[in-house]
Length: 266
Ligand code: 13P
Ligand code: ZN
Image 1 (tube, rainbow, N blue to C red):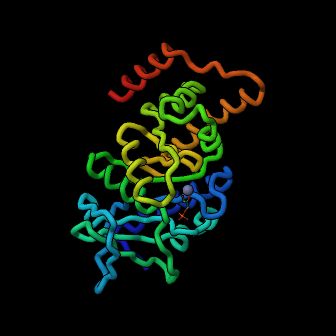
Image 2: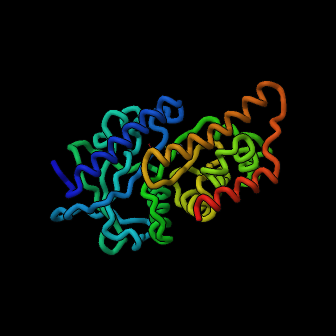
């Protein structure tokens, strides 16, 4: 069944979701149902007659009529890798932004990810600020979670000192760094609000003892940001395991990289 006019474009996005879901599973970052992905689609569905509207806890007028794909709650990432549509669903925000309509792609009953408040809230923040990211991705990236178990790494500043300090490319690709969200119950509006606040000034967001959120313009690019942050964390642990303190980058070296990023983006 073709739900969209831009069916080919959407099928390509869903193939990328499947590809990345497989990588997340193979990396050991998405055990069982861990992690979730949502995509703002470049098309809307002509609304079905008598739609069942689910009210939103928070209205999102900036997302009015927008259509999203998202992974379903409890769905295994390794199954998303096989079929994004069987293990996810499409939703369309109502014209007033106060509710959403689930649109079935298959006969399976699939409910949105439990991190729905964070996913939709982040898409709303992106729409309000007028930037062009379309992907929100969450995974239980082991090395990043391990960092946040360290009592000395409990702030964005402490986290970024490590992430930027281990490899020059981290500053190049994640110049605004990671925002740190102290432990909050997952799936809640409270953790969603804290995450959105951190995304205002950071490229990625780390949830203490839980995982990471990234946003991006395409699925692969979004995954890359998580992968780059994890590479730094891995280097830090490799040095520690070898029994020495990693030197990190000097402030001058980081400033030099910041200037390079500014030049590159201007
Ligand atoms: P869902 O299966 O509801 O997407 O939850 C997975 C998860 O990672 C919660 O933080
Ligand atoms: Zn999670």
